[in-house]
View (cartoon, rainbow, N blue to C red):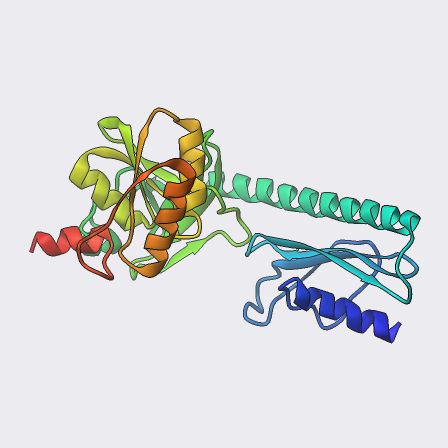
Length: 280
């Protein structure tokens, strides 16, 4: 059993996941925290004892990561054992998906409550003043701006809050992948897609074109694909940050959707930086 335990921990590492200190093999869903995020139990695993090894899956909801975990003792498995293992893997994935969906729905309800009780934001919020942007559809509660995260059907799944210093936080455990917020403007046959909220608002103000915020570079290609699928006749333009991550994400988005790419002239700037610099 010691060898199986060691092999199982190594399987976690092979999948790109740091294992917990103690692993329970009981077919149940278990949560634990990663060393770099001790307060966030976003990592999880479900493991079954097959009699000749371990089968299940592990992942991290924060990183949208899920991998199968399989170990074998002694000789190669038989066809019947492989079939049994595949069934256990499928069972584990289904359980993990059910847990995640239940949690996301609960967070969605919490986000809706916060959004419903928040007040419309005004231009005097320190973050908006510093970034020189209008609030548009943002709301405010307890001094924090509230930004909605929605899907292409308009369902609110989570929120991002921004305090006076500009610190941004998503609801813990909430979904972000594929979600965005939109600033509706007069021109809708063209849609700009940006990374951050300040850039989104600056582009919308400057162009009077409907603009979408994907919140980060990793999410930008996913959001661009979702918008392209939802509005196949719209012209998409990625207003990319002029840095390595921003340009790389924009290129991926363009490959997926055929979108055009535009960047600020100055390296290291986003369009909020660049437009504000031009105005001074």
